[in-house]
Image (cartoon, rainbow, N blue to C red; front, side):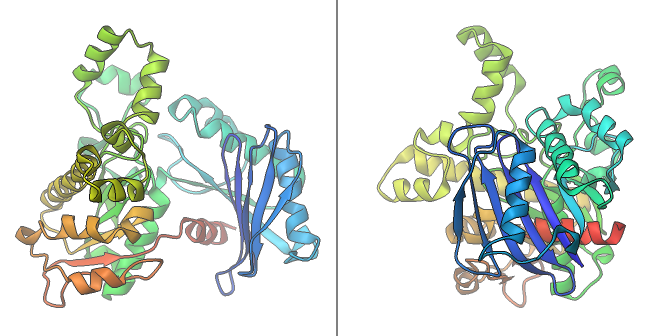
Length: 399
């Protein structure tokens, strides 16, 4: 069974074609600068070298036509006809309060996505564009499935997801904690159970998805009970350009002092804060590490804030679950930044974590493994995430 996994952004479209018999990736790539000058498709097939094609893509429909061409034509083709693809799985960031599990595409589902678009204005409209373009190119007969980032977090209890604001705003606007990176947290929590040899329903796991966007989730007996992102991906810990949790009064104070509009405030909190804002250098942890090594105090401070906040959230989630059996690191930073993991784990001895520095050094560049000692009461694992594979699995299960 061949499944095409799609992640559509406002000016981008990423794809993977997966053979679900072996779960091997046959082709992957992405279209960039859709609707702009200089649009192109970059991809690879059967694990080969990357190729790049310059092509005009004024909209997502034209982008899908380029994906179709890349899959079925030329020296990089992997199939002869689109008919060989048996289903499409779409990543959708926000499912809102009503779409809490993967669903087949239908008119009423698209209508619901449009209704809740203001909950994720940077993401959901782009997903809808991509879904409609996919329908136009692939046809309505091909099964298409939506997999929501928020779905895995839908098991949170009200005490975790209700904001302590006047309750009427929850009733009127569905204002609540939703959480994100759900496909990643679900994938690595399931993989964690496989690695430790226990059922996920018997474990208390804290999953740390650390990248340019970061979130941490508490998974108790297979159900999410809390997660660090909130109504939007802005909440939680310091990220590349996002501030994470900040006293709301600090924001109101700056709006008055600086004369920021709501739009300017949103831009500053999402795009100019976080590691970039503290360091004044970069949102990329590799740049910050290099600068800190050269004595840049603010770059070092940004990294210290990040590891401090990760430790603090891990501790609070261990308290919320009345213990923890395993801690998982994933995401670009979580999978590859050795000193960050060390700085976190060496301060978790109170939980029973016994850190293994040598094992930590080995777990980089896609290598999974334990970075805790064999006699550690809490297992600490580095597990590369695979959100596309999870989307493909859920799509296969549904169709």
